[in-house]
Length: 226
Image 1 (cartoon, helix red, strand yellow):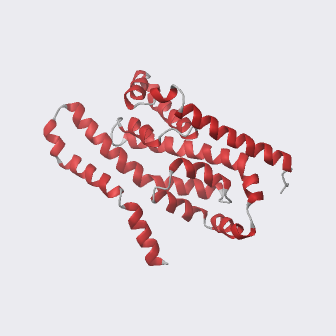
Image 2 (tube, rainbow, N blue to C red):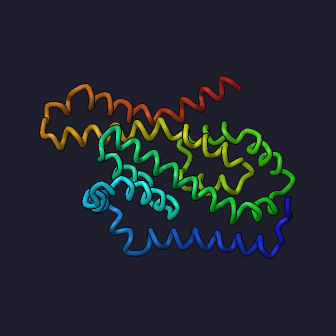
């Protein structure tokens, strides 16, 4: 394995930090934030016709890389319905974190590795050995999404472990969220208000409430198995 030259490592690290600052500034402190609303984004996607889902998925992926609010992006996708919405959100939530991981890996990993002291090397090695389990666990306990996407790229975790850990880890939360929002949206649009008290809504709301207890359940199970 070729050892990266120090100047290249520092340059890549500076580029990585500049990218994060630019992304944060673009979304948080420019007029772009005023366009990131469910109504506006939903209107743009609906107006795109058959290209709408593709635009949404790619937009979600770009939004993740630009540190846009993930919940907002998921709400927009969920209005496509409980099942199609799940598919669109899951695909966007896979492409975006994958790109963010690769950015962190190629621009920041060498610098991060050079800064790790002896005391932290064993943790980095442990993450590399148990990459899938670590990624899956952090996804299930709802570790901050954007932080993890870029941050895992700075660790020694293998790409395939991160990818499949993310793919499985976000399934539950994504389905619960999109099923709840998508079901309520469908009933609201149909005008059949009586169904708001039907089993589908109650089940969706129950799943949504249950999702808040998933981190505690996972931690409890992990503690019992230790």
